[in-house]
Amino acid sequence: MVIFRCDGTYEGILTAVFSGYRSDDVMIECDNDNMFVFGECTEVVTDLSKSLRVAKGIRKISYEAEYMMYLAALNNNPDRGTDIFYFVKSVFQNGARGISDYHDVHVANVNKMCRNTGREYDHFRGFLRFEQYDNFLLGKIHPVNNLLTLLGSFFTDRLLQENFVIADMGRGKAAVHNKGGEYIITDVDTGYIMSLQPDDKEKELKRLYEMFRKSISIKERTNINLQKQNMPLRFREYM
Image 1 (cartoon, rainbow, N blue to C red):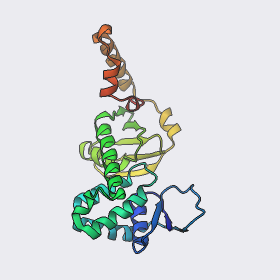
Image 2: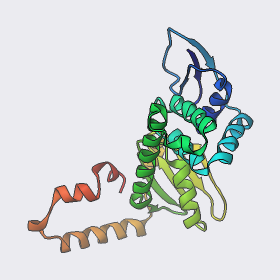
Image 3: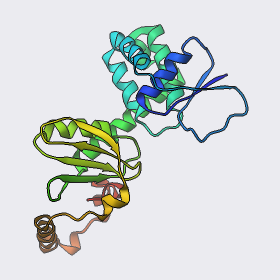
Image 4: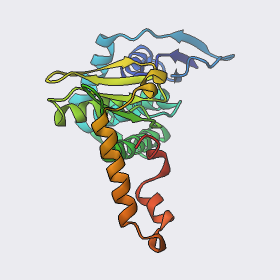
């Protein structure tokens, strides 16, 4: 077995796919903390030109396959690199029908990761809330999967004329958007993010909303289980 260790990003995984494509028994490791006793381990430095060649090759066959590969790369599954490697091989060998060859465990896994990432992304598109600070909007999230690029792109389209920050509190990264421009992904100090206070108007609106919520709620009709179904607890932490 040949083991390729990469940085776990979409581009890093595709670079490892490019490097190991001619091998038949490959593992792509996205967790740099793992140690291997068996197998030759090769450190892969992310190369955008190599990753782009793989992405373009898949795109020529199927746009859907490329998007599935991208969503799978954003998943938190530590085996995503290896599954994507064999998924790419399946698509190159079998064409567009290779994306639905569920007899191949790696193809099936990519489909599962794709659905999992997409489902969480859909939740955060609806559940993410921004607070108004002095000159920007701030939204805090703690997703299982790495959703910043998806959410950054989504909200850039919808809040183009706003300065906003979407902070992933679990990964210590943020999508930062300047009014009228594009967003960037950068490292952030989550302790500093938590220390920030919204402006006075935002605080007053939150106070008024809480008063409104309490005034219309009917204690006898409170249904905690239904609330959890409509709004899972893990999405409420920063709302």
